[in-house]
Each structure stands twice: as structure tokens, then as C-alpha cells.
Length: 105
Image 1 (cartoon, rainbow, N blue to C red):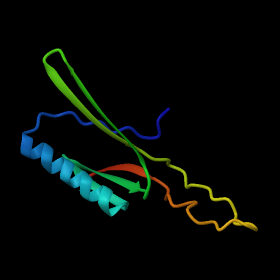
Image 2 (tube, one colour):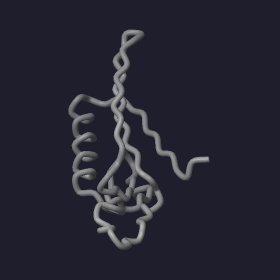
Image 3 (spheres, rainbow, N blue to C red):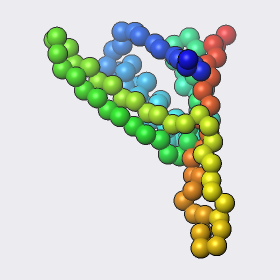
């Protein structure tokens, strides 16, 4: 079972699609707590410094499908305690991710 799933399908102009990608890029660039205006609602996300990405392009049946996917854990990254000979650097850079959807009034 998924904790949350938000899916939105609509017809967009090229400019509207570009505006959505620009808003997403700004949220990714900022990181931390981000809010995206999506139609009649707002999607609030906690975006960590490190995430995994995937881009997929499929051509067939007279259409081109472009999917852009980003993933990150919902739980905070656990760090190992720095012991003798361990500097502790580089561990735990990721922040927790929190997804919630709220409707705008």
C-alpha cells in the first residue's frame, strides 16, 4: 500500500507544460520543504539534497511518451557513529522526505 499517490492528467499547451516543469525545477533547486501549485490544489514535499532520477522515452503507436521520475526515501538517512579512524563526513547528507497533498480553498 502506498502512503500517498497523486496523479494528474490533463491536456496542456506547450507553454503550460514548460511552466509546470519550471515550477518543479525551482522546487528541486530550493530543496527542503517545497510546495507546487497543481491545478486546484497544492502538493507539499520535503525534498532532500540527494535523490535518484530516471528519464524514459517511448515511441510507438503514433505517440512519444516522456517520463521523468525522481525518488527519495521517506525516512531520514541513518548515519553511523564516527569512531576511531572514521571522520563521519559524507554520511547522512540526505534529509527526510515528507509527502502530503492539500487542497487549496
